[in-house]
Image (cartoon, rainbow, N blue to C red):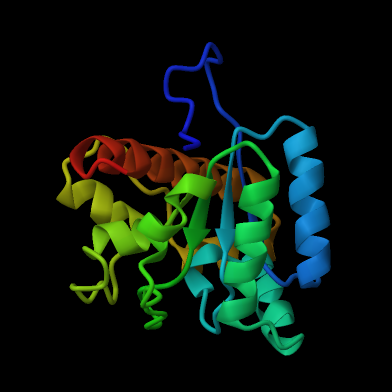
Length: 193
């Protein structure tokens, strides 16, 4: 089983994010391949959905492009499996509790664990038993008593983008990566993922 290199010699791990199906599913594979060859330590593979406003305007456009291309959840899961089977780093599946994208019936977090795919939403909702509508990374961190905090909101990111405040967007994204890392580490310990 692939695991997040929590005891790595590196001081900082590099985590990246792609929206599956943007610009196409085939391109998603090529992008993941390039990122892995460039030295990425962990990658989030986001399943596109229609209202990712908290992620900012760039991710909104990537999600919309993937949906406009006809990308389906089933296709994303197949591509995520292909990517995770091919490359030797751990992957997180990103999908939205806020818009009701439910955990697959076949229990993705456990079924694909051997490939290195972890679905934090499935783990945190206890395999879809709890409705997580409206829960954010910041809320999870606060709920579990983790020290990381969000920096701004999706609405703030849209405003910063409009005003060219790239440093503010960078701080927001850095906070998101740290919260994701801390949630993963918490779940790895608390839930044995």
